Amino acid sequence: MKHIYQKGTKENAPTLLLLHGTGGDERDLLPLADMIAPGASVLSVKGNVSENGMPRFFARLAEGVFDEEDLVFRTKELKDFIDHSAGEYGFDRDQVVAIGYSNGANIAGSMIYHHEDSLAGAILFHAMVPRRGVEIPALEKLPVFIGAGTVDPIIPKPETEELVRNLRESGADVTDYWTSGGHELRRDEVEEASRWFHDHFVK
Ligand code: MLT
Image: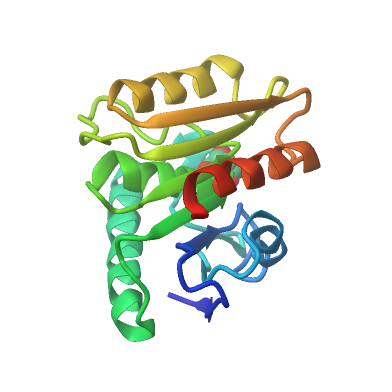
């Protein structure tokens, strides 16, 4: 997968897996990583699917309607890519924390739903329920931060609440933070995510 790897200066920090939104690329979230966890190593990936020229991490049939077969295939592809990259770049595979926005948050959520121990934590900005009707693995206090907008036109509030509930019921340690906004990423949720990251991952 097309990507950028940047080795950080903080040896003990987890590696950040950056996953952009629809139409973005592997450069998009680099400034965000710097705001949330300066000095951490970064693996920033570009989605392999193109929707009319807009990069994404998996195909969709319509807005908010995922192509489940492709979602499952692409989720495994991304997980395998992280496994491979850990060997290539020499980072600790067990210490990978995803930061995803929108479509990128959805594939991070899908990794959590489908592959046990694929992430050590996740910051999901404006994420949907990635899939229904599957058994989520035991998440054993997996730290998850969810940033959401109360008037997000793409993700109705009950859907975010369902995601929070699903993850908590599977054992994750979920922190949800709500802005008064819509689907856009707001400064206050990024600052809150940074505080959360330091509480959970900086020793
Ligand atoms: C998705 O398709 O992942 C969601 O609708 C979010 C988006 O990319 O707009």
